[in-house]
Length: 142
Image (cartoon, rainbow, N blue to C red; front, side, top):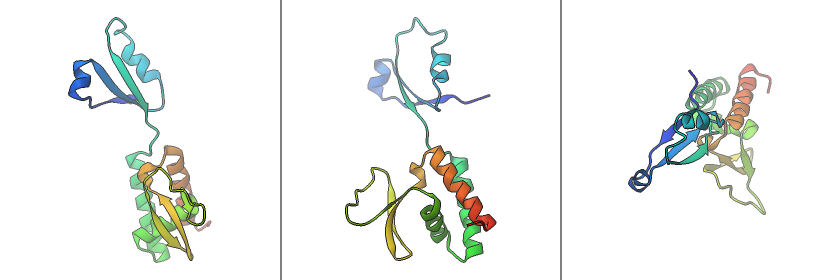
């Protein structure tokens, strides 16, 4: 079985107006499978696409960061910051800095300040890149 999407909570007003919210996991097939057999029903379907990192990805990254921290002598927080610095989504802080529209934090590493985007904001591709880099760091290739 493949999960193509999930229904999201609708407000009372949306329910009264027969509005359904659905989050689609990167494919329009979920919409097609929902509409199939309901073509005569009057609904408004609001669709959002989910391209965020998954909880298993996040758990795996944190486990790798913990292992990396133990090997390198870092705390978990320091290890995550170092790995994000090398492989994650960061914006250097300096003249002309424009804050991203994503959550994150400022970190000072190697004498420089940068804004590191929270992994909760990462796309699956961004998280995959971070995890690939963490695996290389654990293997000693970096």
